[in-house]
Image 1 (cartoon, rainbow, N blue to C red):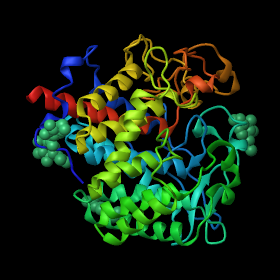
Image 2: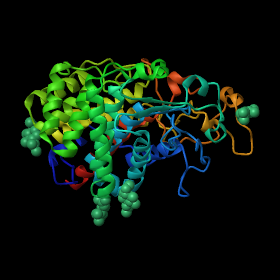
Image 3: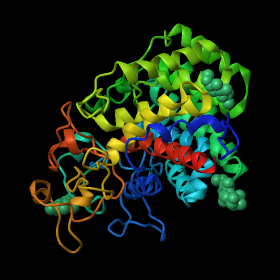
Image 4: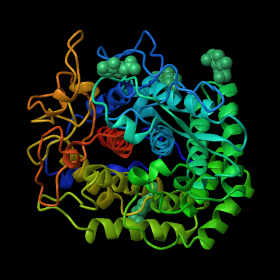
Length: 462
Ligand SMILES: *[C@@H]1O[C@H](CO)[C@@H](O)[C@H](O)[C@H]1NC(C)=O
Ligand SMILES: *[C@@H]1O[C@H](CO)[C@@H](O)[C@H](O)[C@H]1NC(C)=O
Ligand SMILES: *[C@@H]1O[C@H](CO)[C@@H](O)[C@H](O)[C@H]1NC(C)=O
Ligand SMILES: *[C@@H]1O[C@H](CO)[C@@H](O)[C@H](O)[C@H]1NC(C)=O
């Protein structure tokens, strides 16, 4: 796996960009820093003294498994307080991928330690969730019970049941994605702490065996997840987990299995998106990187060319894949194409400009920013209960949900769902189609921003 050391590899990567710059470069370093603050605000469990979010304290300390296992920690999924391992794991994989690729950027912007902490907050939790080789907790908290509450996580008192997958109730997407996250994190921690890195890899290997040996859809094992996070099948997660394990171990057995899955599950077809439940574009890119085979490179090129030239766009140029998570969809595609440009030298200037165009839209090139706390006219009412609460000791409840003013706590760095197909957007708290925030929305965005900083730095040194 190439780590893109500044100024060493692919010096041509970003050269073509300046000629076609349409607007001033936004402050990507600030955006990167803010995105990590958003993850900090989503932390569950016992918070360290060093927490940078003044309005957050310890919460959900008594989250437990069915046999009393400690499941405190991890991240809240969105506005609600369910801890949802599937999207948490995808988030972790994508953040770790960005950090592996653009390590020097994280370091030079002073974000490397924060980045490692963000990953470790998730991986420590996944280790707790993995209570036995073939048992993994996929959810703590019940969506329906949780959604009857609006307020601070520190004050919630609803029952928080825990749900797991095991040999009788398998969930291959969940085990596969958790394995991928742990493989990626294991690579990231290899230099920092060999013991921790090896511990993560051991869990990654076991979860991969679980995912491949006991096949099943996770939403059959954890039916409460179906309404919000329905699975689209596990073929992509099995393949994704196998490539990540290959990257982490260099054991050819895993790349052979990945290529077998790729054929068996027909992963070669051009996808329309790259999302937490549709990883095909990421698989094609990773296989291209790992094997250098033209077939995978061509698949990545086909996905990016299609996304850039043919995908639906809003009048102002944002690619439009779905109304739910509009901006995150765009940022995820930008991430794939930026990696393809920098790492694989495919259509460099076109793909870099595309990534920049999509991220700049998010950061305000068309008149408003969609990143909370950043830039011009940013969202003041993200759909997020904790930040909608006033300072203590004021009470917080449903009154805050409908209150027509800005969230009293600024949820720095949260990327909102975004505008509709006509660039229309409403900054209203209860309009979750516009203003929802989630762990996975920020992940591809953050990793793309790191890549754009890399491009800017390489350019400046030319
Ligand atoms: C990248 O691709 C371009 C166009 O195909 C080529 O001219 C250039 O030499 C390549 N650069 C590297 C570093 O491979
Ligand atoms: C960060 O950069 C500094 C200065 O170049 C270097 O000494 C240090 O080793 C880097 N840290 C990491 C974790 O790469
Ligand atoms: C739970 O919290 C609500 C409001 O925060 C309170 O009215 C209720 O009495 C609490 N219930 C329990 C069982 O503590
Ligand atoms: C390295 O990781 C191990 C296992 O998690 C932990 O016990 C140890 O304290 C870590 N070492 C350092 C220096 O952080």
